[in-house]
Length: 115
Image (cartoon, rainbow, N blue to C red; front, side, top):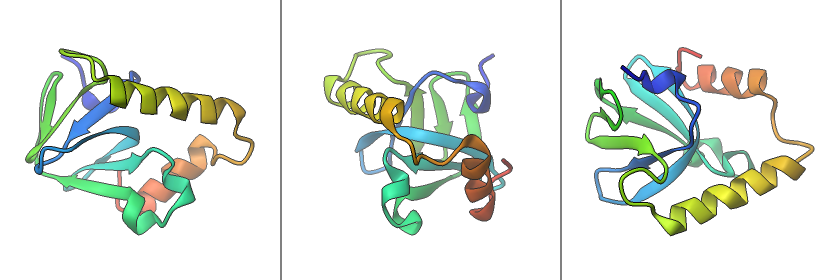
């Protein structure tokens, strides 16, 4: 059984409106799952950090309330999302000012995550 919160592969989320995006980070939250947009740190955290509310179910894909989370590229590769993820990886490889993991976890805790 794959635990959503230990998966290190890139993940995408399908929102209740049908839109899909890649998550930069995700954390367990008492109300479900807290997740960060790609390039979250360049915008307003109130707009780039999100809470998917609901019980976390499944072994991959996972359901969090009305959202569906799955490994990027799984079951029908999405070239647009894969390209965004590659751009994100290129950015991270060159970024000098990206917050280190302890700071990202502290920010997630500020938003209520169990990080």
